[in-house]
Image 1 (cartoon, rainbow, N blue to C red):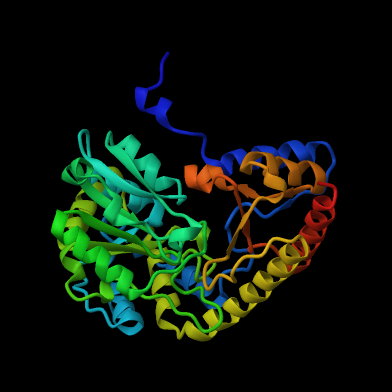
Image 2: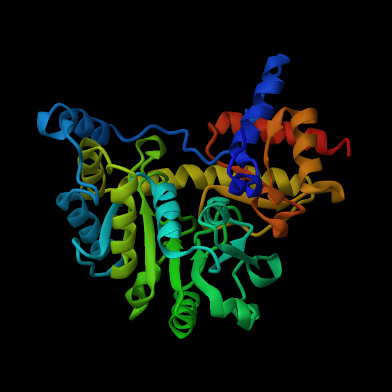
Length: 389
C-alpha cells in the first residue's frame, strides 16, 4: 500500500514532533516545561462558557449548522469589524464562518490555487501556508523574512516569471513566529502590489487583539479598496482563549469568500451552531476589558523572558504583539542543536526556528502561554544551562 505522492512533500508537523520529544523526556522521569506551543493556558471566559451551555441545550442547535455560518454569527462578525476596524462588510457576501482559521486557510488555498499556480509564502511562517499549497498541487515561492527587513516580505524581489503564475500572497501580522508587526503603509503597498499583479492577498489576523505598550494591530481591510483583492482571517482562538472551540471567520473579497464557502459546503458541515452563538457572546459582551487584562499578563511574561535573555547576553527588541519571543540561538548553534540542547540540559522545550522555514535557521521561538511561575522556572533553567556552553 502506498500513500499519495503529495504526502512525500510534507514535512512532519512541527507540534507533533514537539509532543514526541516531550513524551520521551517525561518517560524518563524528567519534569519538562513546554514553551514550544502557542496554546493559551488561561481558561475561556465564564460568560462565554455559559452561553455555550445554554445554546447547546436548545434542540434546534442539534441539527446540521449552516454551511457558511449562521446569519446571526456572520452579522455579528461584520458588526465587530465595523466597531474594531471601521470596516464595513456585507454579512451575507463578504463573511463566512470557519471551523478555525486553519480549516479556512486550507480550503481557500484549494479553491484558489492548483497545478501550475504559485502561492507566495513568507518564511519563517505558520507552516500551514506552505503545506496547504503543496496539498493543492501548487508551487510555492518563499519570501524570506529577516531581521534586516523588519521581518516584512520584500515584494520587489519576486521574479517576473513567478509573478505571472502567482495566485495568492500570504501575510500574517502580528506575525507568528517573529512577533513582528506591520503598518497600514505596508498594507497599502501590499494591496497595490496585488491589484497590479491580479493576486489574492490573504491576511491571517490571528493575533489582532494581543498588544503591548499601547499597540493595537490594524486590519488590511482598513486600506481603501482592499476588498478588491484581499481576504482576511479573524479567529477567536487566541484573543478569547478558545483554541479548542474551533471558530473563526474569513471576511473581505466576495469572490474569495464565495469560493471558500463553495469548497466548505463540499467538505465540511460548518461550525456547531451552539459554538457560533457562544462566539457571538464573546464579540458582543464588551471584550476590551478582558483583552486589557490578558495583554497585561502576556506583557509581564514577555518581560520575564526578555530579562532572562538579557542575562544570557541575548538582546532583542521587545515585541509589541503576539505571545511569542523570537530570538537568536546561543553559542552559534543551529536551531535544531539549540532546541535539543535546552531539552537535554534544561528540560525545557523551545521551538526550533528552522521548522518555520529556511530563514528561521539560527533562531528559536518561546511561547508565553505557560503559567508565569513555570515560565520563570524555565528561564532560570535555560539561563543556568547556557552558562555551560
